[in-house]
Length: 271
Length: 271
DNA sequence: ACCTGAACACCGTTCAAGT
DNA sequence: ACCTGAACACCGTTCAAGT
Image (cartoon, rainbow over all chains, first blue to last red; front, top):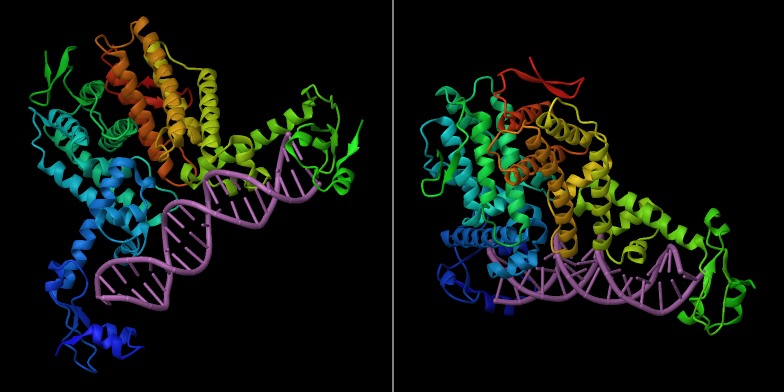
């Protein structure tokens, strides 16, 4: 049973009630076409309240979500959170301004989804890091360096630090989501410190909780500085010193004076 | 020669041209009164283009500037930069929304003035600090700690870190002003490091420029975390560890393991 | 169903009018 | 002169209408 909607609308002037339209699904072929002219009605089972929704609808929604999110974190990584407008997001994603509301309910909803996405991506990136070094502190420092290095290459990482280093005003749900993302980041650093403690490379007497908070503050502070330099963020060589600083403060070994960063191996090495 | 403006306006319907009004000044008594009913015209010297402007006008402007600025940095310290609206500023300062434009040209103009003001106040506060400690590194650490401690008590300091840890979008002049304020802050830390270097308490081999950038990043990162906790910022005890970390990383002495913060003296002391 | 765009509210900004 | 507030533009948001 297929009914052309154009004809339906032409014949009945008031046929647009929700109860009728809830039964509409879209044919899969529409996803390929350019326009929206392929709407059909099918699978109607009168009186049961159950409706058939073809997979293509879910796909369409997923596509919209993905495009909007991608537009959002690109804008954020380029220009910051407050520069984002729904108009811009819609335009980049190939939709109208209203689409953000269709999919995420509000601008805040979009931002919450965006911070969760980039936070998850950051955590995935962090897990993928091949941290190098002879011991836990070496690997901690290597992790921090590679993590910050990623600012130059990963748009999602830049977006993450935009969220982590300066929240939006008066958006409680966003604030909660950002705090969660920051907590995940803190837990990650805490885990690395625990490993360093376990293998004896962490300076004895170091309070892990406090050290993790300090390191996160340092990394967010550095990321903040990289952002303010304009569009693209690079990891300035002046922050090699910050990594050296981490090693000095937390290593159990009385490190020699001359420890330098080896750009090839990504390690701090004695020289 | 005094002319009551009310009468002037009643008699001439089109007397409001700029050329006429440029000659008006306000009597000093107006500043004391509540309303704006005391406008007078005086000191007119026809054809010379020179006009007498009584001090009370300058005072009035200065008062307006001060009230608007105070309203601005209070709002910023409480709710952040993007939460500030000209409506709010006007209301707090006892003016209309348009007054910000009268005095500062734009919201950005107000923000630039605000960041300069709180930056200058921060520098003044920093100079007033009685840094304690036996040597340059001790005094550096003491400075950092007292500086961050001030977040809990000084509204201007909270406003400063709102600016320093997360700039506004698409406001080039504001960005420049914030960069300048951050540079002043960096120079201050650099000077303290230089003193530590001079008296031999700074770990040899430390690059002062890089160390200053690292320390500023750490301090801004900590201030950022204090802000996100809601209204009032306090210096959490977990950041005692960050100060200890500074000492470990930059002191030339191989410090003993147990160094703790003495809340009374404001110093890190061996225990 | 998804999507759009007119309509509204809010706020930054301007500027003619008021004192 | 200082100051106000109506008017406009822009953007977040809603929602009736279009497909």
